[in-house]
Length: 128
Image 1 (cartoon, helix red, strand yellow):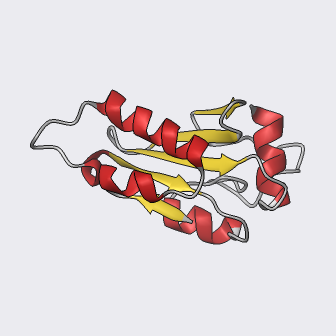
Image 2: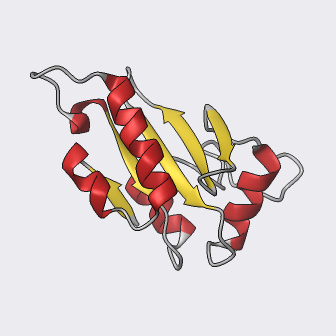
């Protein structure tokens, strides 16, 4: 997984569509000279082979597990904890947004690619 901590990290992202969206999101933040991206949030880009458990740990967000009990995606009682999830058709990816304490955000980008964890990809397809 890639974690974007600085706007300078964006050109090194391996997925051109995701790189485009992350650049757009950073521009929309309109950071002042006193503000730094890590103070406001982070962008995480999922890669093939990434384990969802590790992704949830690094993001500090629950993607396929409930933050309150042992319910996981696939259970009929599962309710996602993200604010919203969007499928970007042209860029061939999903964007999952979390708003945490205060105004801190986490945006997780998932390539629409069969090499991504099947449960994560299924969740993205179902909720987008």
